[in-house]
Each structure stands twice: as structure tokens, then as C-alpha cells.
Image (cartoon, rainbow, N blue to C red; front, side, top):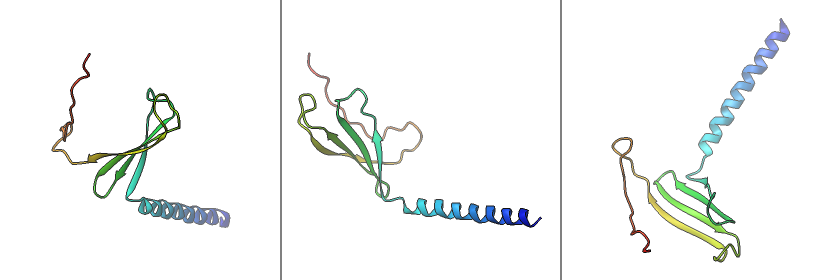
Length: 104
């Protein structure tokens, strides 16, 4: 009986410690979040990350190209991608950027 009580107490304490650790982690998540983007089908040696400002809604795409990839030199580019805005309902178009089709 004492062994069952001891195991139960250890289980409850462990449960609360894990819960506290998860809560602390969630509170420590920073203002800026980075999300790796797929570069499949793009220039070999390219890496892209979406950076999201969780407080203000700004977005940037950080791109890294290894040196001598294809016809482009290596380097880092940070492209501002706009600001996230809420829609009125699912499927609402918030903003569009259009450019002409390439001439043949």
C-alpha cells in the first residue's frame, strides 16, 4: 500500500512539473517566429525562412544562397512581405499584388 501511495505521489509531482515546464516554454516563445519554407523546385543551394512578428503582424522572407548557385552569386536577402491583416471571413482576399505576364 505504501508503495502505491509513493508511486502516486511521484506521478502527480511529475505531472505538475511537466505542466509547469510546458507553460514556461509557451510564455518564453519570442515575438519573432521563424518558419522554414520549402525550396523544392527552386534554385539548388537556396534556403528560405518566413519571419513573423507575432505582435505587429509584419512578415519577412529571409533567403540564403550558397556561393555560385547557378547564374546567381551567393548571399543573404531579407524581403519585407507586408503585414498580416484579419479578414471578415474565411477566404477573404486581404491584398493582391499583380504584375504582367512575361512577354513571349
